[in-house]
Image 1 (cartoon, one colour):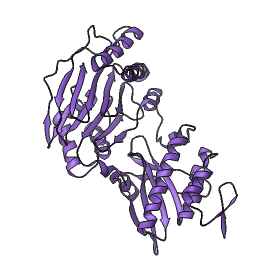
Image 2: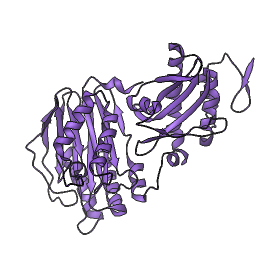
Image 3: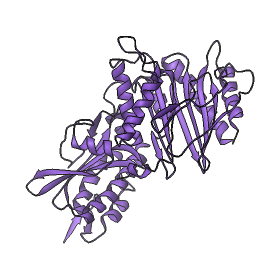
Image 4: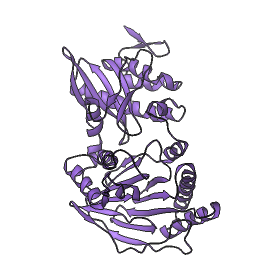
Length: 406
């Protein structure tokens, strides 16, 4: 007995499904991904297989349609079982009909949450679950690889029109979440569809983690152009292995040389040594990092502030503090703490730190904590941000890193 391959060639039922899929994807067109995945899902015993991708605001899971893929509606991240699997990074199941079960498996690129995959199966033994986890891991890789060739996935993730400035900023971002056995990094930007001058970047090179959160003056496209130039200069200086004062000076010189008038950007440029917990940073007219330790808010310092990037005339001083295992470091722009309620109350540093501590205590992993925090900041302003808001939360040696895996 045999069944057809995606190109019509018969294959044996006994052939390994993952190996079969790997062979079939070399000439895969991006718009065929959902159909090919659904066809190969049947070889794992799944009657139905549907890929969902999360939108830019991480509010909805959007089904990826295709030939032979059952029709589905979008799912709420906060109000559905699939959304719960996404939030908790956990495989969940529910009854479909009779003895048939519906499985929801988080779709992860490393530990970054791309969405979920829904399977309708008759058999949910541990062996089947393990096979489906491996299958979903390969699906995630296919989504990431094919995303470089197409606009289909990007268009699916949009719920509203995106500004050109936001388009530029999203294209420059690193993955929103990174994790190893010693560190977790999660970041976010708002407003997702109209972000202008706020951005962040990071890199992990052996025991060294480099981070930057930046706020370019102004709004819209001019701010995005300045921020994009600053990110390029930052990456170049970082990859040339410059120390923090030289990194800051390099970005400063590019902004001062390429932009006229009073164009500048504030930034916190930081470097963490994973082996020792030594955190060093440069303050370029920006809020200093915050540390949440055992639920308490700490202000590392004192730290001498320096003019924003583009306005500096000398290399800045480096500030330094020692992290403790379990510390959470917050780098943020002023749009977070200066978010103002309709009654005029600022969101503030204490509320920021308290929210992160409570979410962590409740068991939320770092990316879910950041997602909920941005929703909380928006709700504080009655869903209307008066300024761009971005942040990075870094967790050092918390022991919770493996919670980000399925």
